[in-house]
Image (cartoon, rainbow, N blue to C red):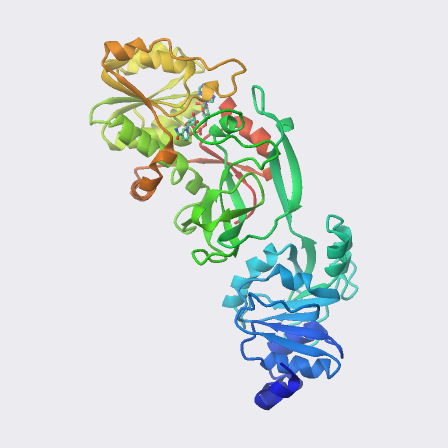
Length: 527
Ligand code: NAP
């Protein structure tokens, strides 16, 4: 589209800009710093009035293009300046790559004048491989002449160039292509390559998992393909099962391959979506891996409402551990009112929920946990009837005291010695739920099996294992029940939040040492 095409229709707007009666528009175009002969693209403009104005500024030696709608499929070719407009829902990396040396890209920041669509655009801008970070908000609000200043030196228009020189990770071609100035009206920004820190498994751990079993690397976040989303990870779930996923060999899920990003569940925010089911800004739970940014198939992400519960809770009582407790106890344990239920790792993510559901179902509940604080917590806070401190007392004597008629249901999270003790105290027709065996996960030798299994024969009992993923089709039922109990004050939850992705291997060890108190999560970024 040329100026001649536009001028008849947009004479009024051209006049407005010339007279500065439309300050935001004047500011945006001013920030582009157009010169005669520039090639400029107006993205998502729709009507082309700004294009007409820019065409006038670049003059007959230059050219101005307009990309209608959101410009999703539009390749502008090499550009000196690009203006992002209201039709654009998120920034395309292509547009950054098409900026010529010294090019400028201007996009509005959310503000009073243009609140909603700019807010939607914003996460996309921050997720672009050439990300834009706010530095200050020295606002030239009413001025048409935006002066972009390096936040460090104060010298004009060099922030991006300086930053891209620092970013030696960029290829030379990219670094020079992005030695362009990216401006956001009413703010100043520096450009940096979007960094994705990742923990990759490099060796199969022997015994306790160690930092040296991983490489902590930084790579560009990449771009999601069709049907995928780029998710900014906010919190990561740390689960005992992670240790098993690091082992070679057959399990209920394939092992994490050497060189692969360590598998993990996480909650995060969608920053780019290439699927109609997800919008930028949605909060989602899914398999993100131990990293800052994850590219995940949209159909493998579950949207959650961040206003209903603190985000880490969706990884704990309202997430996979809560569902594990729900289906394990109710489906396999089938508790009946008045029965005696024993839960090990009772202060943990799964155990705390299992015990509370057993209470909701009218059972007597005894928790086994390490240390007096956890024992007090499950009794005084969660409403268990009693606790046995396996680190400081004889478990057999404690359970025998609290379960005079024997154990009807044992919800086993730990295996090993404690499982054997529980087996020796079973009531008739008891159910033993094999949920996990954390005491065995870091064994250098083979797993210790139960010696007292003949108690099942004597008591006509049943021992059954399960994996929560088998219940995927029924997750909505489980989540609804758990959320209902939580809203009704019958289900309490606690999270143990450790700051910093970089702490991952050391934080994971806390689980196997019993150093976590509640659902263990890593906070990766601010929500
Ligand atoms: P968690 O209970 O929040 O944390 C693990 C706890 O285990 C520690 O805090 C510690 O508590 C206890 N523990 C660690 N080493 C122990 C040992 N040697 N002996 C006794 N207790 C020990 O973890 P979670 O996420 O809720 O997981 C609990 C169990 O459920 C794990 O075995 C896990 O693998 C299993 N799980 C199974 C499924 C499934 O689908 N079947 C799904 C999720 C989880 P103390 O301080 O009390 O010792």
